[in-house]
Length: 474
Length: 132
Image (tube, rainbow over all chains, first blue to last red; front, top):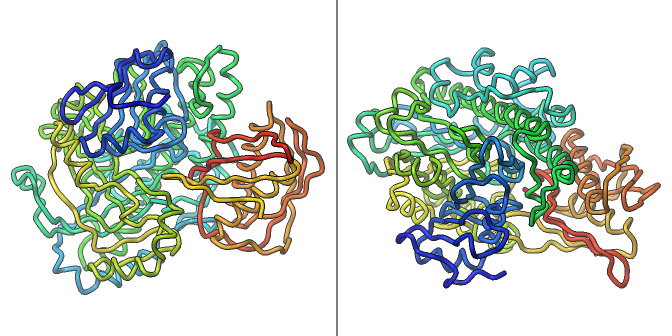
């Protein structure tokens, strides 16, 4: 059923609603954040129909939501948020995605652009050797299956125990880098076999590691509080749970596809396969997904250590000086209060005085890190009380694609794109050149507009704009 | 060529047609190999791996089969463009997949159920959406 302008209700200049009366099977309304310019584009896409489909799931609460970076996914749209009642609601692997706990981590270095300019190329070339894409080849870290289970159970904290990073890092990770519900036994041997050689690897697709400089400070008071200065160098890491997470998602979609008949659940799209959260299958998935999420946090923690080693050696600063700003998941399902919140391509964004926010940020709100597409700016923002009231404490997660990877590759060659970006002062290291073209900036929505929408609607607050000066792409 | 890469805003969509299910399943393995290599796969056959799968329906079988190829690709670090089918029913298959010794340059996370396989007048047609 095509969705037209007349079917949507304007809540305010940035928030729109499709009422639950739009389709008979909807249990709650579907809301999305967009400006007038994005609106027509969103209406054309299948993404909105996918959002409406999520509003049909049993136990869904209040409304389903999409962030301004919404685009077509499978099952849930990317940029989708759905909160389920813990007792009566569903859990769906399609609401998390295949890359469980894909997420972003931002590191602060304390040194300025002028201190890195001369050796930037050297540093990026070193990183490319230290951090493989990990496609079939092994990662930087060799572990046994017993050790892998510990990573699955304890996440980033086990990585710290093994010498990757510092204990202080853990408090600056969502959930301290470990979902305690994780059960390594609920991750299949096949998933473990796929993931065992992939700790400390970046993966391909849109995953990257960037060297960035603070280009614009929006909130001087907060920047001073966090000792952030214009032109300071930051490092952003964007990766997830690699093959281990992909296999875990595939495994449980099969399980749920079978089990749905038993629970007499009917859904409008097979990728929305789900079971009650409290069913054995639902709990198995939740515990397996949590273990895969822990793997992803450990992966980002290990990569952080590899970055610290190269950075401190080349720029001659102590490793301790490279500190975490924050690490957020953007593909995950979590218990928050009485709800099971599914975020698929959305970031948690709690406001001030929330006990889940680490002490150092408690007064100002949780850091929200939104990466732009390759070669474009990224943002550091803060969650707000309004986000907690309006979006189950959620925010956007990126720019959002508007052009297929195939089309992007036809439009520009990887080699040419590399030269163009280098002319803008960005050092590019890519494990795959065609992959580079797929991520061309023109294939994405404008990140400035995405962040303007979430900031102006009050669900987040801008702190810093970061401009890439070096990119390592998987 | 029995497969075609279709446009999709974020992921990889492949259409394959064939006179039989075997042809469609085989074409999809080739298409996956072509995407992972970013070029046509070579015809060499290095090592063989047994595949045996059961499913409730043909779509389930196809998705499980493609995910098996992706599992082998990632765990063996090799490309699997050639598959020989000993049996291929609507709910069961037994086959051998052959690695070519080439290494993947790209990655596919999973085949998804936003896919279909159906009978057409001259055989079968499948459209599969992969998460990359």
